[in-house]
Image 1 (cartoon, rainbow over the protein chains, first blue to last red):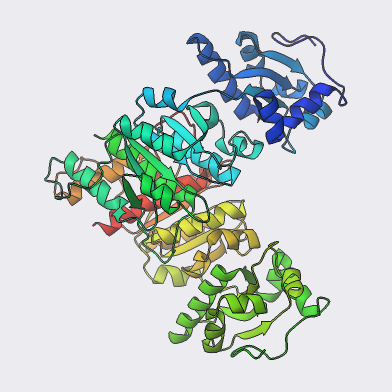
Image 2 (cartoon, each protein chain N blue to C red):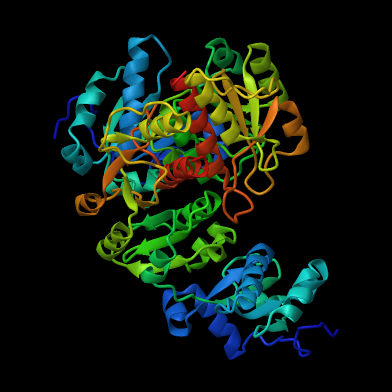
Length: 302
Length: 302
């Protein structure tokens, strides 16, 4: 069956070197070697191709190198033929279900994967774009947590996402899946030092807030002040209180230990999500969602 | 070594029937058979014992049946001797590291587990206590998600947590771990129908809100109205808008599909967490955290 945008020859040889190369993208060394990662399943591949087409229109870097899909999948989702025909520089190949299973990390890859480029985005590029809301993960270890926080950052309208050295690799298959496509929605900087990151944003005028269960500043107090300003009322006389409407960089720490003292010391303020019940702490994903939505709310209504 | 509150005889036989019985609590049938579940690790056992002692003071049901701990763990955490000595009705036994590993679901149970009773709490009991904030999970499947949402509900000060039939078992070991002790902090009702749940809370005067990405009501609009009321300003003329300060029951749906039409139809209102970025949807845990904290904020400042 001839499919527009796809090579005529289907790929059925499970023993082919290319199958091994793609499957190696599930490992850190495989990704480091080729500078690529794998997006699996229709939703992730759709987001990758959408971003690829948008980048092409704006003369920005390619996102997708190759698409591998089964006939079944292409019958079910005709948009992948249309997108492949439009996406310049993307090779697209029909593969047998066995070959697809051999390439993919998921047990049920739902018939399609995309080999994507790991983008090269520098901290300087991100700072120069004057972002209003940025999330920084410091030594977060769980790929599912990192991916879910990236998805929440995207939802809250964050302009960039940063992982310091010692954090989980966001291009690991489980992390990629947890982002549900958000990986393609905002610039991601990896493997930078917190020192360099905080200094760059402070020099650009951003407020750096550390999410810290023991923080002296209560997030609700900041939201109260925002609401009061918005209503044109006098705000509480606290000159040293951060203003959520300002460009803000949030720091989120390791799952078990949170941010350490050295990391906390770099922030302008330590902000606690209030605990109204008996829980002694919050999951980092929960804390990040509540903090970023507080900033989004303050910035959007200001 | 004689330890106050602990049986003199350590338990070293990995082949003992009791070890198998405890290990079976990792399975649904094992839990159903004995009406017990397993809390693993110092933090979870501490929360279980704390709640057990508090219940004993208030003539409420026992929480813990048995503690198993290694000598190493009891040396490291002396409070488990003190608590065991105080906790009436709790049997406490020193076990070898091998026996503990045979009982536990985790690879590293950190030297202590508690066999706890699955509490019998009825929907009627919970409604009669006039809760201000309640979370209801409808067919949430992932134990980590369910546990994390329970922890977030606890942090936001929710008064009860409900899982409808078809939801994951919150007493499954992975779910128990994800709650980080919150399982012991608020009443939990399981395996009820959504119909019965919603009817009971509506009759008691609560507002039932469905978290729904396609909902017509924006959560930020509700928070704006709360802030305006708080500032003594005129609120927007929207008589049909829910009031976050009211006693509220939130419904959260399945990870993949969200709440279905029949479930949505039972709610008073369908409320969407605003999406400010490119993400098309939120992880159910993220949505639940943002919704419950919005209610908590409105209720606490009213």
